Length: 115
Image (cartoon, rainbow, N blue to C red; front, side, top):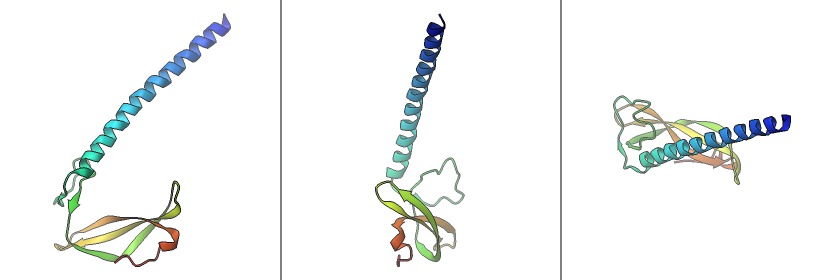
């Protein structure tokens, strides 16, 4: 009798976890589709007052110059190894400053010229 109750409890846990994983997969695919749609859309002008929710993953087109200082964030990429994400300040022609993700570079290229 004990083994039957233990087995049924285990089955209930496994069914619950399976249902949760299916729900999570659906949620994740929806989020990825939303991100892909925003990233693939054509760039627009930088909003005057960006909103965290409304403008998430919004592609923008700006003109100006990348400022000289950078932030190097040490990360590791699968099948590539250690490297840095390069984050730089960008000043637009109208004087606004934004942060720009300049991408990943290997540790050996950390101080390479990025002009």
